[in-house]
Length: 91
Image (cartoon, rainbow, N blue to C red; front, top):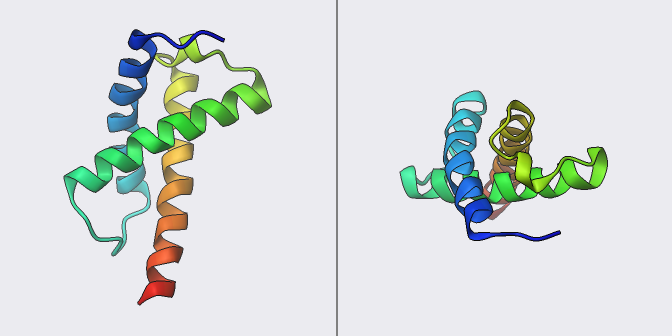
């Protein structure tokens, strides 16, 4: 599997959108602002892309698809949920 610079940029763009959607779906007191949401979304896109490729054989080149966006949002939701649990434990 070859990951090009275009693929990385695509994950960043889709990750920003996925992070914003995930934050709207699962609002809470996770803290942080736009920067944390952007990092969450990018991490979610990477996690969702990895899980989508592993479980459903979704190609990394299909990130600009509905399936790519769905996996990005699901990955971001998972990261946001885990981050919320971590913050509760820390407080």
